[in-house]
Image (tube, rainbow, N blue to C red; front, side, top):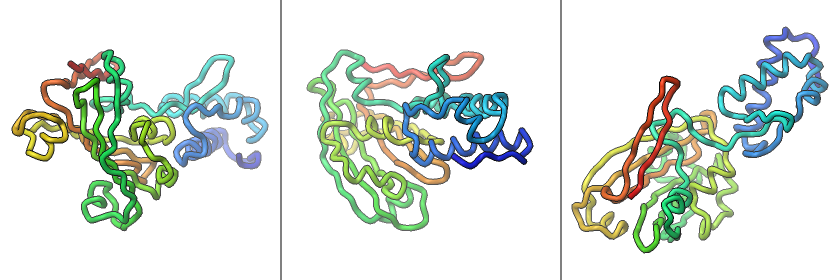
Length: 251
């Protein structure tokens, strides 16, 4: 933490506290589940009143970066999206939620210098090291989804040491890498011969593609394409006056 600041207006100091904590979260210094310093510690660090600290923490909680628990303190939130068209899914969890046995099959895991297509998918202008992963997710004996993912090793260098042989890439990223923005793009099309083979469906079968990109600040984290057999996967957005409450239905 910074040294105590005694000559900063309360509003600016509250914003400074919020910014300092936000940066530690977004840069991965404080991982999901980490308990941030208690209010008393922050008061002593910044030389300010409880109201100033409380204002900063309330703003962080409102943005979804932290979770405040009565008597327990404040904790870095698990990286979830509450306002996207669909939430950031955990494929293994959704398969197990429908009572099926989950299995992961890694087809490709390659660390490489980014190609032009990689840079376009990550929306970056300069080449960098990336981790390319292709894998299939099974629900019992049936292929549940085919995944084509890029991880930016500039933003997530620790991913280079993960085999992903047992833990799906998305599950690992959810638990270890905080993000600040996400974008989903959803489309439907008929499977070509290659995708039909991956999904074990007939060529020309209806399929659903969900493209997702996530960022930490202005830095890309990952770009993934998830392909699902059309007859086994349905997206449902459930709304309330206060906002979206996303839901997926799986056959």
